[in-house]
Image 1 (spheres, rainbow, N blue to C red):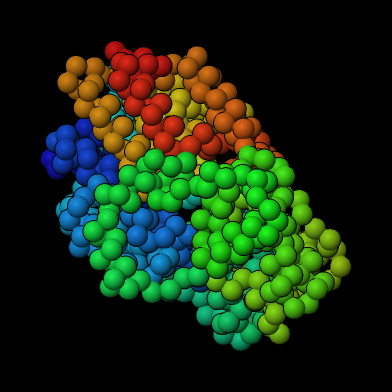
Image 2 (cartoon, helix red, strand yellow; image 1 turned 90 degrees about the horizontal axis):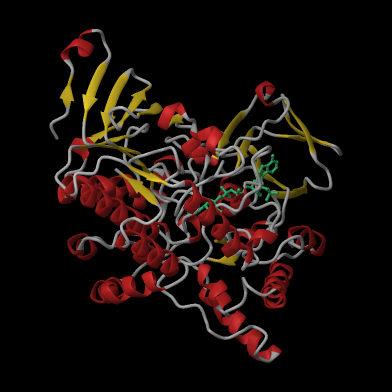
Length: 546
Ligand code: N01
């Protein structure tokens, strides 16, 4: 890439670079977006990445037990046949180092790294109406300018560390799972406290319990979980996948969630109790996220949902030996899959261990962190290490934190103060030429991420190609279609049981003070893709182009 650097500014320590497109983030989205813009459109594109390696989410999330909940054969790119045929996964669910290895393999294969600036943290981005140019500043005093700015910052990349009184006084170590030390943490013989029992906490607890002297799990909301049933991928599996990739991707794109399996067309209420039990048992044995596809209406009909929730509650009671602990671990305040359903490797079994204690912090709330551990309203728990598995400021956090100002200096944080305002999750009014890959208002986190990412990157690339072909310099979401889209996102969520889970991060409920708005698009991936394609084919309806 020929980045133009201004000699004058380079002389005073700062440096300025002019390119055609700036991409922020070198995870799944940033890598693919760079490939498309540079290698398909021939643009000067640069990726700015805070970390010292590629991987995005998988660069940071290295906590014990971190692996993907989507199955490896489809948690990968679909755009390149050679990559598909050359790469093979070792496990049904890839562990974090293997995903980083895969992303490095892709980056090397496509020679992407020469256009990725690592250790380059973006501190602000501002749009200039006179020149239709974005200017991005970085922590190390560099300035990049380009007509197009594309955020590839992920949906779950801003760690949510709760503000707990006394944390600074803690004499042990504390860590957030999403910012895990690269050298790992030595739990041997240590008294560990884990706060949080979402997907992350449910993956981490069994591994920490095996390594630590003692583990105390502080649970605010009990959760459902399905066994992952992880295992090695055989040579036969690899061969079968490679031979069938076209069909796998076709199926994934045709569905609701970008997974290559179909949701049953049968209602949970249309079968006998015995038949339903048999179907759930089979799904439980098979394991994984596919459990929720057992019936058509698990996420649409409260009575149907109850059958799944009851089945999973009964499993907790089967697995956990102490009935009082089993009861504490049983969720009653939300239906199965109305929050993102975790999958696990021995989570409930962990509570049968002698070195594990469960504390219900709804019954005895945390009062403060003391120098020696955690104090609840009932007692003090002495700890050497605290693990915050407390999730993320999801979807909006990574974008708002970029300190973006659009047309006439309008700030994204103000534009979204009552919740994200996007058109198709791709753009926001007053932020011309800014595209948000898997932004709020798109299927994103309700989808197998690489599939959602590829759809967005392809759409953005086609849009930029069309604009350049027509000599257009500016594209901006219009306010009215945006309002309609936000209303449609709400409608789509309301047609499901998803908004019922009042503590869900889909609603922003995990971050104190965050507006309660259902953020991802729940209308289904295939439907969403058709809408985006239709918008593009109709002259980018809803966008102002000039
Ligand atoms: O975060 P979460 P996560 N005091 O927000 C609790 C993806 N993911 O990191 O439910 C005490 O789900 C909070 O309690 P409550 C996946 O999409 C993917 O686990 O708010 N507790 C909850 O128990 C997932 O959904 C994979 O009452 C506090 C937990 O912390 C998303 O990431 C693996 C608290 C947070 O759960 C986020 O999952 C893992 C406080 N102040 C995750 N604040 C793979 O596919 C929060 N909690 C690999």
